[in-house]
Structures are given as C-alpha cells and as structure tokens.
Length: 285
Image (cartoon, rainbow, N blue to C red; front, top):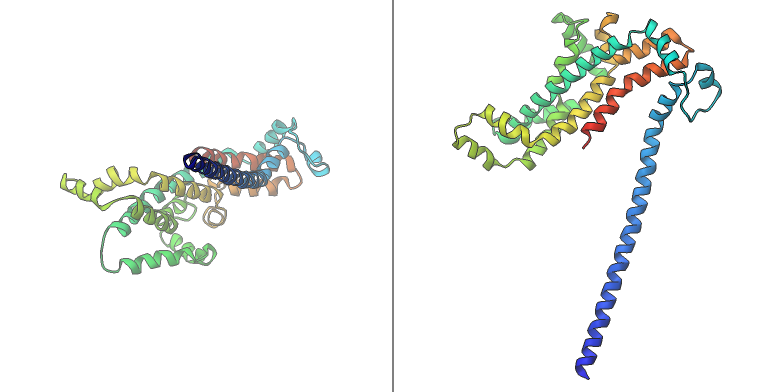
C-alpha cells in the first residue's frame, strides 16, 4: 500500500510538472507569436515606401497625381525613355558604384587595421587617441564641411571623385565597432601562436585576423556602402562636372528637369535604389 501510495504521489507530481511545463511552453509560444506578428508588421511598414516607389515608376504622371495606386502599371518603359533622354542616369550609376565600392573596401580594410591596433597593442596615448576617434563620431558632417572644402581645394582635388573616396580610409564608426568585436572574438593566444611560427604582424592581420572578423566587416560594409551611395551633400560641394555626378545628384537633376513628370522621376529613383536593395539582401546575413 505504501509503495502504491508513493507511486501514485510521484505520478501525480510528474503529471503536474508536465502540465506546468506544457503551460509554460504554451505561454512562451504565444509571446513569441505576438513578437513575430509585431516584427512582421514593422517589416511591412518599412517596405511600403519601396513598394510604392516601384509601383509609381510603372504608372503615368496623371495616374500618380490622381489615384492611389496599389498594383503595377505598364508605363515604366515610357517613363524610362523620357528620363534617359535628358538625365544620364547610368553615368551617375557608374560613378556612384565606383565611389561606393572603393569607399567600402578602403574603410573596411584600414578601419579593421586601425581597430586591430587599438584592440591588441599597448602603446602610450592609446586611450586618448581612441577618445578622439569617438569624439569625431559626434561632430555633424555639416560642421566639418567648410574645413573639408578648404582641405580639398588646397590639395587640388575639387571636381575629383577621389575626394569622395579618400576620406573613407578614416572611418571612426568602423574603428569603434570592429575594435570591440576583435576584443571579444580574437584571442591573444592565436596571435602568440602565429608569432611562434614566424608570422609578421601584417601577415597575422591579413591571414588570421581578417578572416575571423568577417561578420563585423560585413555589417559595417553594408552601412558604408549605403551611406556612400546615398551621399548628397559632399558630392554637391565637390563635383561640378555633370559627367561625374553621382546617383543622388542625378536624381535631384531629374526632379529639376521634369518637375511635374512624376513617372520619370520615380523611374529614376527606382533605378537608383536597386543596388542598395541588392547589397542589403545578399550581405545582411
């Protein structure tokens, strides 16, 4: 009898425990479902401007001005043909692609190299120099624009695309982000082992450190590419030759040329946004 009672009591406890476990799992699933619903709605809200931009690029200006459009139309080719006759969008596309790609590569490599120095080497004034790097993050671009303009003029780089690429070497945001990633992901023992095998410091960085910090570099490369591609103020001050204009300048030019031709303007904007969507889609993971 005592054994049966104990067995019954143990069975009841197990059943209660299983019931509580199922209950906890069920409540967690509900919370997780609510979170997924919220994130899905947020994703839809973020995607709506891109969707309407593409939809409007396929309709005539009259339809865009008079109707609320949800489905694609058949006027994209007409809009594109009108736009391409007066605005050399593909020239701007090529210029932006060259500038954004070079800026992304330079900021990624030299930013990672600087981060490696701050993270793994000890030298006098390291914390002070890193504080200066952090302080540069809070300075608005508009404040530094006059000084940047004077520097570019003094070294004769006005109306030169190199003036939009060279500053990317000193990217404070990349240094800030990658430094902490190196500190958390790269062990000192890995570097010591490489030194014992006869590797120099640059070979350690290029052959060992860079492959280990690819996730952080990919993250920052997305932001650098998008920021360089969308940059409007610096190219506006630096470039004066229309053949060297970037996509944002070409888009602004199309607005001035076409004014009320919304279809052509939306076609220009849609084309200019495609590389950003592609880069984010393939590099976000």
